[in-house]
Amino acid sequence: SEKNTIKAGVRYEYTYSNLGSETQKNIVDRKYGYLFPTIYWNHKINDNNSFNISYNKRINRPTFNDLAPFLIFIDPNTFLSGNAALQPAISDGVKVDYVLKKFVFSASYTYEKYSIGNFQVKVNTTTNKQYMVAQNLTRTESINTLFVMPIQVTKWWASYININGVWEKASANFSKEPVTVTLFYYNIAGSQSFTLPKQYSLELSGFFRSESLFGVAKLKALGKLNIGLQKKFNNCNLKLGVDDLLSTFKFGFETDAPQENFYSTSTIRISRRIFKLTFLKTFGNKILKEKRERNTASDDERQRVTQ
Image (cartoon, rainbow, N blue to C red; front, top):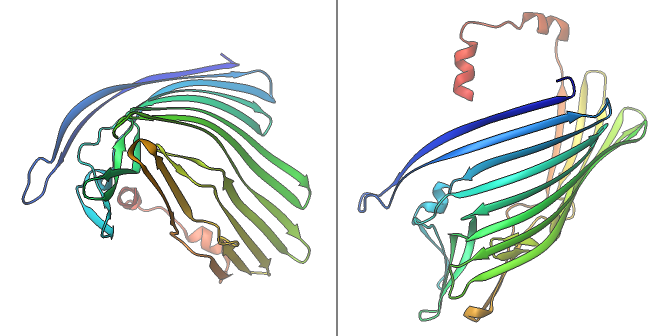
C-alpha cells in the first residue's frame, strides 16, 4: 500500500567443500544445503517518520586460512594453525529500525550456532605448547543498538556520529571445561567536517571501541584518529592527511582460562601512522572531455571482468 512495503523471499544454498594436499587428499570433504528465508516490512508513518522490521537467516563459512592446516611459528612454544574441522556458522537475526528525518535508531538480536572464533588458544600442558587456532564456539547471542546522528551544526560545520552499544554472550566447549563469557561494550565512530575561509577545509574522523569479545577471549579497547586538510585552487587542490594521528590503532588480546591454569596477553600492530600528501590538477576543457566519453559495445564485457 502507500504506507506499507513488504518483501519476502527464500534462498537455498548447496555447498560442496573439498580441501586436500599432494600428500593427503580429502582433508575437508563436506556437502551440505540450507534454506535461508528473509522477510522485511517497512511502514511509513508520515514524511519524517518510518520504521522497519526484518528477519533473516544467514551462513558464515570458514575462510581458506581458517581451514588450511598450516603451521606458523611465533616462538618455539607458540603456533598459529588452521583447523580443517571447522563448520559453518548459522545465524538467525531480528532487526528493528526507526527513522526520524535523517536520524536512525536501530536495535537487533542475533543468535548464532557454531560461531567461528579466530585465534582461540589451546594449551598442551604436557609439551608446554600453545596453539592459536580458529574454533567453532557452541553459540553466541548478541543484542545490538545503533544511533546515527548526522547534524549540520552550522553552515561551515557538519557532524556525523554513530553510537553503537552491544551486549554479547559467547559459549564454547573446546577446552577441558565449558566456558561462557558475557560482556557489554560500545563503539563511537564519526567525522567532523569544517569549511574554512579561503577555500580551505578540514576533516577529523575516527572511532573508539571499548573492550570487546573475540570468541571467548577479549579484545582490548582500541581507537583511531585521522585528520585531513585541503586547499582548493582554480583547477587543482592540495591535500594533506594523517592516518592514525595518535598511533593508537593496535590490537591487544587477553585470554584468561583458569580451568586450564592459563593466562596470556599479546599486542599486534598491523599499521603505523601514515602521512599522505596529494596534489590534483585538471588539464583541458572539462565539458569537452565529458562530451567525448561514450559507451562502446565491449563496455559490458569489460565490466564483467572487473566485478
